[in-house]
Image (cartoon, rainbow over all chains, first blue to last red; front, top):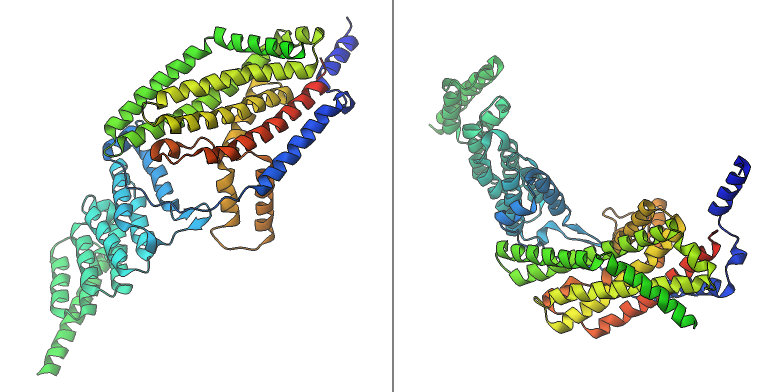
Length: 254
Length: 257
């Protein structure tokens, strides 16, 4: 058999026959099936959106087993799922309708799977704390505060943000001071900026607690934790300013 | 006489599955799945029975679909490679009888698989709900059987055909959610692209069976299934089987042997 014959056989076997080889009943069956499917789909009720409540988080053991030895990847997937929960197919659930205790439960489980992950506390302080419901805001900020102490060196940005939310959105300066003090006293490490240490000072000054602010500035200067020269200069200036203000206000009272 | 040829082909197709020890694989998976579901129940703090039945049902459903599709495709590829198709069609047997015989044989296997899967679920759920689940799974498997035959006739390769079948299955199971997402975007928009996406997803949905409404684990866990829910499933299965059989016959008649 020559090459041309082999090629001809190959082409013949791989080329489909013309449609005229298909019997008419088969064409009718195919057309009838297609029409029936389109009609059936058309008469069926369209899918309806159904919001599903956020379920309670499973136990830590169940999650550990489900992670199949890769808790970090599981934590990341769970975080995306949790974040997407408010946008279910066809329905959007406002944060104010979410059960924040359950949300905090899920965030806790995700932090247990991946303690170094920052996403859960970022979501708590920046996303879930943006809800227009003071009770829920306070609940989730308190959650950030409690979780901060497990790793202050890494989690301070989220508590610092919580302090800003407490100060500006809740207008609760004592709460903001509590969070700022926790950051100032517990967050250590080269990654912690000077302004994070100085936060309580600013809040105390805003609260009119000049004496406490002066003590705080003096403590920061004498503790030896402030190394940068510009920061030392800033604190000394602030100390002088506070003393002047305290003297002026004392004189005005007398 | 015509029926006897179809039944003969169906009988040998079913026998092939039995001799390939496919039943042992199905039984082994059911036993492993049952063991895993017991383990899941041990670590669940509450709703152990619900965990068991839903986990086992979901696992069996996916396994049954995958196994039947894989078997139909590989069995037909072997038939092509060993020239079994040419041998049968060299006899006075029309192509439609060959296809119906094959479809019937594979369908018997699908029904047997659904019943075997249902038997183990009787441990966790009432017989009435399990019966609904088995009927629905049978319908789902029949559609997947016909689809596997069509994909193989069209694509002629195991990898391509199996990928197409699995993609079709996942798309059919999620098309409801995709439609809802397309019609309710996160950011409200009336742009042209949004309307094109909506139209495209709706058009695809017209051509797909709504498998998301089939074989629900909810029936086993909350016992909410009823025979009224079976009617649309049965109609959808018949309609789609007609469409798939028509398309498979169309391809088989155009095949150059």
